[in-house]
Image (tube, rainbow, N blue to C red; front, side, top):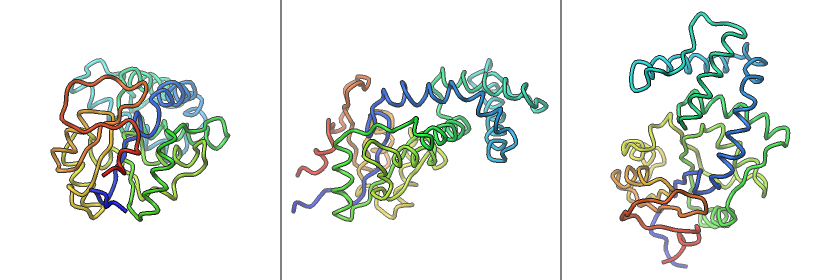
Length: 248
């Protein structure tokens, strides 16, 4: 068997393992339509309260920085007023395609209810199933690094068209590890998975992320999937299927 030129794999989700259409046409609208009801029903939940505090802090940080018109979540708001302020901020963040920790955490909780009810089933490219099985047979660890929360990642891979893929994944990373466009985040991931950066291959559809991973010393692949945005010229190897990761 040909020896693979890497010892671990780190995968993006959106546009890499999962069609962008599932994220933007299914997951995001699902959370947007249900966030007000979810908050109203869960205001007393300590985890939701922590998310709302993070949302409040993020709104203040945004207003003091690059987003002076960011909708605020007043500290003295309660009940319906709190829900209304939070929903306004969440919808504003979603319209701007923000990737903040508070937003992703709340979205993940809403998706959890949808997966549990069977109203959400995650879409994953067919070659991903085969690749995960192959890596597992080689005892080569595969990890996920996404802007979506770790909880949301586990929900997605736990509820796919082919069932639960979580046993085939070695671990998960999100923005709590660091921004995806920051080279230090990839150095930290390599350290946490006990691999030299040059022995790790990172697959993403995002050029800025690939550049950051390459700056950290990782191998990179740009995923060219149907529906992905066109990219400017770059020096990263590309793939249209994970099958390419097993070629000599």
